[in-house]
Image 1 (cartoon, rainbow, N blue to C red):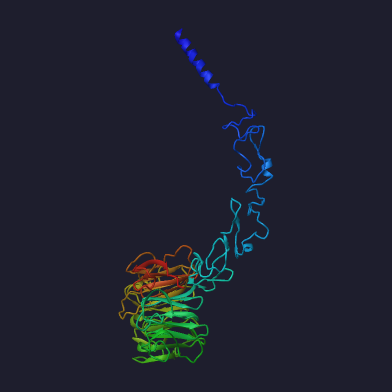
Image 2: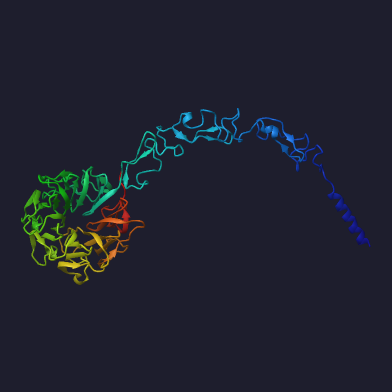
Amino acid sequence: MKSIILVAFFTLISCTTKTVKLDPYCGDGSKNLEAEQCDGLDTGLASCESLGYYGGLLKCNTDCTFNELLCAANGRCGDGVLHDAEECDDDAFPEGETSCEDLGFTGGQLQCTEECLIDSRQCATCGDGIFDADGNEECDGNDFGETSCVTLGFWGGRLSCDTLCQINHSQCKNLQGVSAGYFFTCALTDTGEIYCMGANTLSGRLGIGSSEPVVTPTSTMVTDAVALSIGWDNGCYLNADGDAFCWGDNRYGQVGDNTETDRLSPAAVTHSGTGFASISSGYGFSCAVDLEGTGYCWGAALDGRLGNNVTGLATFSVPQAVETTNLQGTLTRIAAGKQHACALDVNGQAYCWGNNLGGKCGTGAAAANYTIPTPVSTTRVFTDICAGGNHSCTLDTLGAPWCWGDNSVGQLGNLATEGGVARDPVAVNGVNNVVFTSIACAQTFESTLAYPSHTCALDSSGHIWCWGSGALGQLGNGATPDYSVVPVQVTRPVGVTFTSVTAGRDHTCAGDDSGQVWCWGSNEQHQINDSTQAQFVEPVLIPSAL
């Protein structure tokens, strides 16, 4: 019985405590701090001004919430209505001050802050030399922000800024040609300029006006080039009028300017005939075909490489017409190699002349040399031709590659003659279903027969295939075999379609359809870029130039 009485006592105490409340009723005229905004005339410390309005009388609704109707009549910042105490309100601005231009700026977006103050920080003044990305400016003076010709998709060049602070990219440039030589590379832009990089010589191999080596593309100051070819220690180009210019080593007259003085910069070739349509640089000599299909060569006549029926130690410092005795038609192009040259006529017949070591003239005979163009021993019709150090290659009308000469390192791509020579054209193996559109022979200039050499060809789908020497990565497929007799496909960067190919001594370069140039192989003399890497086994972009 005592236990029951105690429980009842504690229950009574608990119930009594819970019923204690302070101001529990809305409408009693006293504001409850926890449950009410106001009560009757009691608004606490609140007023229209404390709620952000510019004035008015704050009243209380019957449910003890604020009635702001009389406040609203006086307005507040953020209601979208311009009041006397405001500079602006949302999209409302004073008449005559609705834009950056109204305030004396040249562009941009006028803003209104949360405090209803005019914010002109996104306005810009074109011409103050300060690029304002938020002010409708693309640039200002020399300030382009992070934008450059390269970020706009060009190879290089300089941007300019017009009077409206808009970018002008007319001085940006892309590459439309590239030529790989003996430890150096030169590129031709779509604006007619030539840039070179890599090993230089006292004779001015790079054509940049000095004998200093450069690790990034450096201008030759040429502005009118349309075609380019570099060889051992010199280079040549043509302008739109067919005028030829050459530079570099001129000890044999291979510059063609009627002197034997080395040229650090391009010099005009002395020629009184019609303009030239194509040009090629070799080892101690240069060749070209004029607009009428006549072939010319100049420089050292040793081994008969000029094709003018002269040999021995004779040199010619102006173009000499190539002998036409064996020609069946006018010429379309000449390819100058190390000690020999090859050409095609309008009928697709191939001819070679000069040194025939290892059968690189392709006549089927073991003659030491030929002093005039001699037909290659085949009835096939060809569309492209190249002359390398000790071999030559062509493409027939079906796009199939054929090669002849030295095959000591697989540069002919022919398994049957691996390690030997072929004096007649032999088929390149392993690419029966591939259609090629151009071919390039490595320009190796060492005097021995068996020396690293490779060949590359561009197919109709924009891929490049290479074969021959590969120890320095010049095959471009990510591997470095001593050599490959069977063509391997060059690793093609994602989204890239190759459009041209050229082969130097130990490196290879290619142009793509977006105006960029890719190279791979030896970088020993920075002929690819300024990296400290000695070689690249896959294509890398050559750096841009201003």
